[in-house]
Each structure stands twice: as C-alpha cells, then as structure tokens.
Figure (cartoon, rainbow, N blue to C red):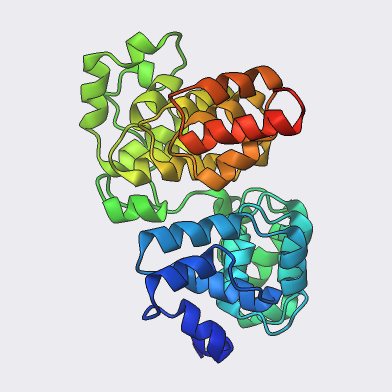
Length: 351
C-alpha cells in the first residue's frame, strides 16, 4: 500500500506528483489543515517531490513540526512504517519520542537497525530487551553489537544468543572498509579506516590562522584525495582541513564537515556568515538547537541571503536592538529581512 493511497482523495490530489506544482508547493507550506498522521504522510511524499522548491518547503515544514504533532502521530497505530522511520531518524526527535517509536506496532527492522546506532543508553537497552523482535530479526541484534555504547552485560547476552562464534570484544571492531575512492561507499558512510599516510600534519592537527590552511600546497593535497578520504578527513581532520572541505563541490563532503563531531561553534559561525556556502549546509545548522542558542550564529544566519526566509525572519525576533537597527539599514541583506527588522523595532517601540 502506497502512502498516497492512505490519504483521503482530496488530499492525495494536492500532493500527488502529477498535481500542479503550485498546489504541491502550497501543501508543503502548510496550506492543508490535516490531522497529524495525514500531515506526516503528505510531507513524507513531498520530501521526494520532483520539484526542488517543493522538496525544500517540505523539508522546512518537517523540521518545524511541533512536538505535539509528532506525539499525536506516534500515538496513532495507523502511522505507516515508512513515515515512522522518517520520524525516528529526524534530528529534532527527542529520546522520549524515540522510545515511543520503539513501542509503535509499525516499527520495523530497518528502523530498529538505524536506532541501534543511537548514543542514548535507554534506547539501546529498550531494543536489546525486546526478545520477541530480536528472535524474529536477528540482524537487529547484530547491528546493536556494533555499537560500542551498548551495555557490556547486554552485549554478552546478545553474543551468546545471536553470535556465539564471536567474542564480545570482537564486536567492537569496525567492519572491513571498501577501497579508498569508492564514492558510493562514502555516501553510505562506509569510510576507509585510515587516511592516506602522506597527508601534511596541518590537515590532522589543530593550528592557528586561516592563511596556512588555505596555502596552495595544502589545497592541492586535499584536492588529490578521493571523495571517501575527503569525507573521512572532514570528520576527523583539523580546523584547517574543514575550512578547505566546506567549499568542496561534492555535497557529501561539505555536509560531512558540518556534521563533524570536532567542529567548534566559532567555525559554525564563520560558515553561517559565508555567503558562498550552500543552502543545505545552512539548513543543517538550523536543525541544531544547541548552535541556535549561540547569539553570533543566529545573527549570522539572519543576514545570510541563503538562509530560508521563514527561518531568518523568526530568528530576527531573537536579536538585540542594536543589531536590528544595523540590519534595518543594511543594503547587504534581503529587503524582506531589513523590513522585518524595522517591523520588530516598531513593535518594540524602538523606532
């Protein structure tokens, strides 16, 4: 059964791929007042719409889904497995909501395997404790065993039941990686375990100043890497390496930079200020609530013309008076942003 067939006919006519694009775009922007499950199904369809502007609007709407809407959908047994998987893997979903996903009757092995990579001990414990599911889908247990955060007691039990020929310590080892240069492997996230041995230390160690990072020799070294090695370097390399790789034309590489566990907030601020960075990178920044608590990052996002306008306008309302005044007079921001700053100042009685 397709998602489209699970929607009322009137809704399906608005979100089907053959519907007029303006109608699909309006639906993605929230023009249809729908109950939670129907709303999530409609957005899930529009996330893969043929038109980029419809997909972008659907992504924005998905990111902005209220917690109450997600909670209501998770409490409905008719939520389809595919949509449940999208909910489970969304960055804005909280640990309590993930635990509700695990209790949903539609949860399938694909979702459980993905959640088996979680950093939340409560999530891992809940999956490991579901003996009925693990007996039916032992691949879920094997996926859990690859997570180094799994409780040692749970690990030993799962090894004895589902992988008795493997010692518990061996499950911590990384699986063999594909050869360097395998771009498909890079997109899947199966990265080579080691970087090329001839990389300059500046790309692996922290150092001060952007000039050294942008030197021609370092640039040439980075450009000579395969996509898989660039992604690996984006995740584990130095600040200088990330400064180079964020400009890479391959979106797999540039998005790996912004998702690096080593990236610092001052780097995120610089990226948010960069008008050459892709909109996709800015959208990833917008999903991180911890980064949005940083005032300079919010300020940079409001002034970057590639920040989605609805999000930029909402961020404006969090800015201080002196910055709103500067933005209201600036010719370097979109007119909608400068006008929005003026309106907020007027509302605050500061004009």
